[in-house]
Length: 543
Ligand code: G16
Image 1: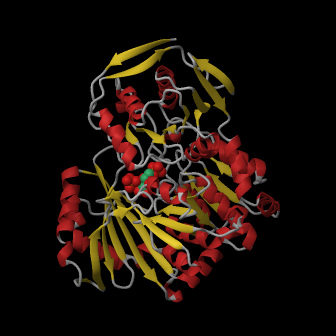
Image 2: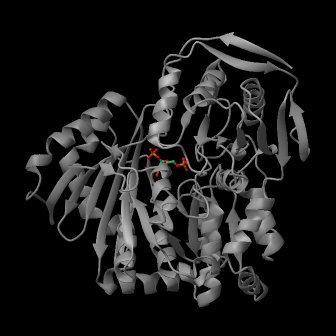
Image 3: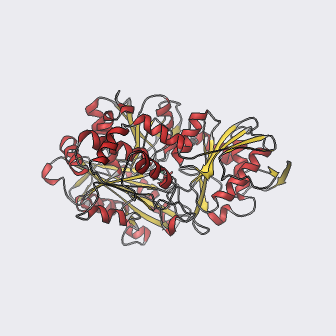
C-alpha cells in the first residue's frame, strides 16, 4: 500500500452544526471537500495512529464512496482497526452501541439524518467520541480550527474494499472488520425489554404498522418486530433502504410521514403506528386515532419506563432540550427525580448520561433515548412503547388520556420557516432579543409575559458554558414561545418557533393543538413580527 500526501487548502464553511457537518451532497463530492474534513477530524482528535474506529452510515447517496475514502485515509493515518457495518451501513444508535461495546476510540457516522438524500439533496459526517455520543462542542471546535489551516491530507492508494462480505480484511497494516449491522443492536434491545410479553401481545392479534421510510431502520425493524417479536409479515413498510429514501423526506413527523398518519386515523387503523428517520435515531408514535407529540411521548415513557426490565430500578433523572415541552418536568417532580434542561442537540445529554444524572432524555424533534447508548434511538422508543402497551394492556389513546388527567396536558407545536434569507432571519432574531427588557409585564391578547431571556447552559458535569441557545418568552399560566435558528440546514436559514401552553382542565384536554395554541401563536407573531420579517404568510412546516 502506498501512502500519498495530497496538498490542499482550507475550504470555507466546514463548521460542524447541531449534529456534525451537513452540506449538499454535491458540495461534499467536490475535490478535497470530504478529505479535508476527514483529515481535520483525525487531526482534531489528536490523530488516529494506533486507534480503532467504527464506521457506517444510513446508506444515502455517496455513503458507499465516502466510506471507501475514509478507509483509505484511516489506513494512511495509521489506524489499527476499523469496524464497519456490512455495506457501510449502520443506524446511528447501532453505531453508538458498537463504539461502546467494542470500546473503540470513537466512530464516524455518514448521515444527514432526516434530511433527504441524493446528489442534489444532503450529506453529512459526524464524529462520535469513545462514549458513543456526538462530539461535544469543545471537540467540534478543535476540528473546525483544523479545517481553517489544513495544508495536506494522507490517503492510501488502493482498490475498493469489499464491504458486502462479513469478515476481516486488511488495508496495508490496518484491519477492516465487516460486521452485521443488526445483530449486536438487536441483542442489546433484548436485554432492555420484555420480548416474551410483547410477543404475547402480537400473538393475541395486536397490530403494528412501522414505516421505515425507505431508510436505515428497515432491516432492523424487520428483524426485531417481524422476526423476533412475531408482528405480522408486512407490518414494517417501506423497509428497503435506498440512496434517495424512495424520493421522500425521511423525517418521521405528521408532514413527511402523512400516509402513516392517515392510516392511523382511519377506522380500520392498526393498534400502534410508528416511524423512524434516515439514520434511525428519531421516532414518531401513533395509536389508533391519536398522534403523540414527541414531548408527550418523552413524558409518558418517563412515567412508565419502570415497566420494562431494563428500567425496573427506576430512573436516575431525566433531561430534555430547552424547546421541548415541560410535560416531562411534571413527571420528574412527581417521581422526585432531577430534570435537566439542555440546549438543542443530543451532544448535550452525553455528560448527564455518563455521570449517571439522567437515564432518559428527549427532544421535541422526535428524539428520545436512554443511557443504553449515547444517541437518540428510534427503535428503542418504539420498543419501550410496545413494552408499556403489553404491560398495561391499555391503548395508546387511553394511556395518553390517563397521563393528561394525572399531570395536565402541554399543548405543543413547532412552526418552521424554511430557507429564509439569513439577513432577514437574523434581523428578526436580534430585533426580538433587543425587546427583551421591555417585554415582561406586557400583555398580548389574554397572555401576559412574565420573562424573556436568551437561553445559556452551564454543563453541571464539566462546567462548560454554551451561550446563545435560543430566545424564550414565558407567559403567565405556563405558556411559552421559543425562537431558534436551525443548526442543521444546508440552505438559507430555518427559523423554528416552538409554541406551548398548559391545560389542567380535563374538559379542554382534547382540542386540536393549533386551536388550543392560538393565543400563543398570535402573541409570538405580535412580539416578533414573523410575517413581516420573513415575507411568509404561514409556516412552511407545522409539526
Ligand atoms: C435539529 C433538531 C434538534 C436535533 C438536531 C439533530 O436541529 O431541532 O433537536 O438534535 O436536529 O437531529 P438529527 O441528528 O436527527 O438530525 P436544528 O439545529 O436544525 O434545530
